[in-house]
Image (cartoon, rainbow, N blue to C red):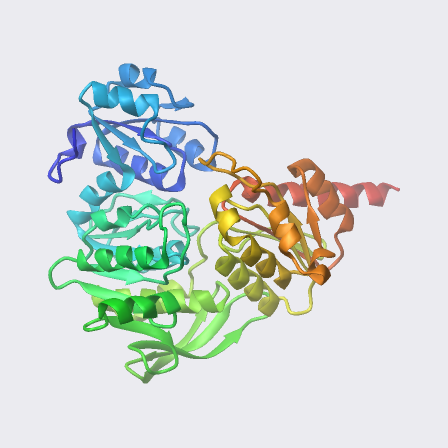
Amino acid sequence: MTLKADIDLKAKSIHLMGIGGAGMSGLALLLDQIGARVSGCDSAESTYLQNLKKHNIPIEKGHDAKHIDEYMPNILVYSSAIPQDHPEILKAWQQGITVARRAEVLSIIFNARRGVGIAGTHGKTTTSSMVSLIAEKAGLDPTVAIGGEMADIGTNAKLGKGEYMVAELDESDRSFVYFHPEIAIITNIDWDHRDHYMTFKSVTDAFAEFLSNRKEGGKMVLCMEDPGVQRLCSDYDVTRGAVTYGWGTGWDWGATEVEHSVGGGVSYNLNHHGKPVDRIKLKVSGEHNVLNSLAAFAAAFEMGISFDAAKNALQVFNGAKRRLQKMGEVGDILVYDDYGHHPSEICATLGTVRKIFPDRRIVAIFQPHRFSRTAALYKEFADALSFADRAFILPIYGSDERPIDGVSSKMIFDAASDDNRAHYELSGNFDDLVKSVCATARDGDVILTIGAGSVGTLGRKICETLREMNANAGKA
């Protein structure tokens, strides 16, 4: 059975496969708060699962067809990480149970509200978090669904009483076309997820369809500094009526005189329709976050939120977890973590770290995410890691993918130039890596873990090991 757009989710029993993921866990929270009877399963532990258990949502370890009989759901929701021929999905089909993708269910919640949908290959989690915080601080009590936990709100999803919903929309499997936003934001367009998009044209086709699905009279907010967005505008003539943002004073919202603060943070002059508005100071770092904040200012304006309210919210914005998040400090060594898993993101992150810590050595620990992405972009990954002074490369985190013959992290290592390769090191496992990183750490280092997989757990382990080493050295 297919999912009906006017279905009453409150009256349903809903089982979520892959419930521990960032997006699926957020949907589970929303459904639970709506009043649906929610259950789920996942093959791996995560911090999101721990949060769901606090809400007394029953969760099974692993995926199994027997869950259909145990929970007797009206709707089975599966993430894009689950193959459609999985026995649990097949059993649901056989029993006439409605089977739906995550985006289909989330879009029912979203489309019933005044939706602000943030799409883009990079930056959508932070931009969504910024818009959400502005709306929250402005008293709009928005419903929120984000692919990462907001440091300021402490969750990745919440059901608000207000008329607005702010959501991060996923382009990876084209499912963002289910949504009908009142305000559609595109931060950038890159050719990622090459297992789904065979050409860059197929990517821009999807984004064009996303824009065409806006509600009548809906606005679109576009980053005109991005080559992919420029390509979209050229091919589909979508700039008419668009709200634009970027560098300088030539766009609707522009940033000039950008200054990076040593130790973190960035400030700039905000311009609206070419006229200066105010000096903006952000706690988060990097030029990419300047652009993200411009999108947030544009969205806030279209939502009727005052400039002062938007400015005050953004100036206390602490970022989303795993977005250049400080994990600890041991002596004069700093440890950070970042979710970046595409070469463009890694370049932006390492470039930002270089600007806020210009005199420190940067040690990057990179865990490639997905075999298909590594096979397509291994040369670009090798180039991106050259922004670090030292780079450790972990084995590929496959996520839902099966290994591809001949594809490994060694491809990245081998693609590096001779000079860069001398600073790269292949690591076999977490334990050996932590020992190697800590043994070679120097005072003043910035150690940065990078990747969308399990590498995010390493920062605290590195801090613990460094503290133990310092304590043992003090006893000697």
